[in-house]
Length: 343
Image (cartoon, rainbow, N blue to C red; front, side, top):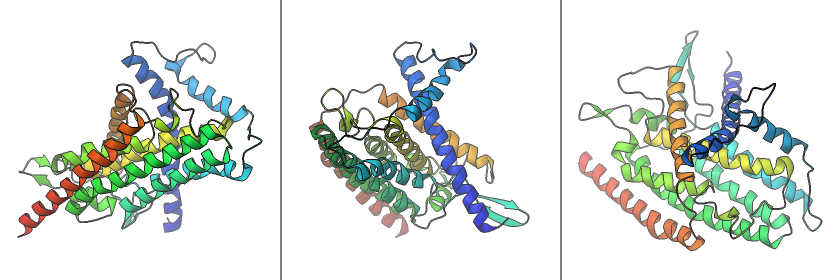
């Protein structure tokens, strides 16, 4: 098996997994919210009388978006209006290829990495690609020719920049402890044990960073309680002038960002593909990684349907006055502990 073919196959599988999981999450969001609110949830759409717990609603959504009219407002700028959802979704999809889904497998005597894009600075690559998404949001608001859309775009820019700074500061602690920016190497570092029995996962050695990162990551996905760029109660959102599949791309982007957040949390805080007591997992490690991702996504859904929406001033205060100082204190404490242990 050639190296180029194997790399292309891994990237294609990662992108396919992310897109299909994002589509599945639209159903999960409906059913999980229904359980929380003591409702039945999505259960109307059926095929030949089979409802499949409401799964066909996802197919109905896709058909609806694909067949709706693609409308560009007369006062808008068509080129940038068309490009904005591509920018937001495209760079989020790139992040999926950098996640370390597994370690290595041996095929015909060759060691093949299960990470689609093995990068020595994978953590920085993912954060950088996520940060580009803000351009798509501002572009969508400006190119729509609507004051409401522009306000939503500016809100999204302020929110994402604030929490990207916080997220980078939060990850400085665990990455310094691991001594690498390579996500796969960070997972391998966590394979060791503490006190002879406790796995050295980031959630145990950096518990504060884990909680802060989940908060900052949830804010970067622009989903409740951090959905201020599209808060229906006070603003109509940066995609108010979008319809059809271009609107669907923005919606899918939020789910893809949630998947990326769950993947980063799994790699840096939950031991990645590592499972306590088992040294070599091979392809089974991919299943372990995915299972941990799904647990994080379940937690994010619980938060999304539990907490009320913040005011915008509360959102910015949380990022700049709480998460950022706490992340810097965590980094300083981590540096001193590592220095003391190596002295």
